[in-house]
Amino acid sequence: MFDQLSDRLQATLSDVRKRGKLTEDDVDKAMREIRLALLEADVNFKVVKAFTAKVKERCLGADVLGSLNPGQQVVKIVNEELTELMGGSGRDLVFSNKGITVILMAGLQGSGKTTATAKLAKLLTKEGKRVALAACDVYRPAAIKQLETVGKRAGAVVYQQGTDANPVEIAAWALDKAKDENRDVLIIDTAGRLHIDSELMDELAQIRKRVKPHNVLLVVDAMTGQDAVGVAESFSEAAEFDGVIISKLDGDARGGAALSVKAVTGKPIIFASTGEKLEDFERFHPDRMSNRILGMGDVLSLIEKAEEQVTEEEAEELQRKMEEGQFTLEDFLKQMRQVRKMGPIGNLLGMMPGMGAMKKMKDVEVDDSELDRVEAIILSMTPHERAVPQIIKGSRRRRIAEGSGTKIQQVNNLVKQFDQMKKLMKHMANGQMPDQNQMAKMMGQTQRPKMRRR
Image (cartoon, rainbow, N blue to C red; front, side, top):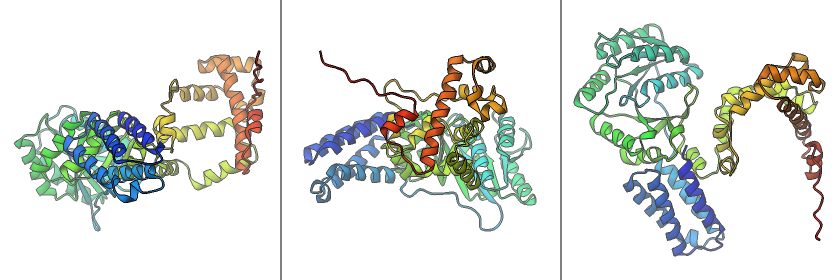
């Protein structure tokens, strides 16, 4: 996500960083590049104009042009203004102090509203809340069945009365039922339309009046760019909503919707859908997103994702095994699966400072299917072979290759690389950072012979 915008902004700011001293012409040139980058990212032109004007004004201040490192100051200003553009400190859901919390979902047909409803339910369920979903989309074929399917996967109960009941009555009945069952949260999936019309808004207003939701969330499709902002603007004029869920953000290489919606509607983005799985859903933090766009990483989100997968006890046990050299292929498989649950490897690399650009280097591709191959090879081994991979030779390698649908050479490479990694992990776990020669020795490398001049 944001790949195109991120590349352009990082290239522009990299050029600014290299300059020892900045002039007004340098700032003007940088602002032109930033303006073009934002417009190409499909950011609202009024938003672009206001953003660049504010950044330029701050950059021309004495604290920048007269500073020892003006380039870094410009990067800092762009980061702060990008954060402010996307909502500043951000916002979370409002929860009821007593009783059930009601969340009303709105959006056009095709925006990913029903899937976003299930993803939100999954997130809240993981946080220990008992969630119920109300199926109030009685117009779209198979909408109720879809909600039942994804709702079950999310760990939530789904209340529905078929397609003949009135959506307003369904919502009121579902709220009573959720209260009776002592649910913590009720999420109401309303009907969408192909376009905004008075019928859609009237029905939404009636449901809102009947159930008095604590949060009204509008789901917009990031892939539609400025159209998404237009939808949000129209909804804000016709029906009050509290915040936005950006769906399909992983497929949006430009980022225009995410950067424009807060400035145009005044409503913050609260959640973002970052993948196809129900787990690919996260709270939207403007400051962290700005850091990602500018290639500064997002360490906090990375830590949060890791903490969801690894307990403190597991981390301590892993540390012990690394220190004592007892780390096995079984442990490696477990760790690899936990990492994969955190999301696509490319996305995780983008959260590491400086790695966003590295993962897009020429001829380097981050391919998750390679991990499938590694997992297949390990699963084709016996428990003893995973514990003592040194015994994997000859016929064992052939059997493992045939069982995993790979080549013997690929099995050889995995065993060799694991042995190298195990040595490196032991050194690092004991606080010993190997120097270049030790690293080369551990990795089984030899120094290249020096080239002689003829």
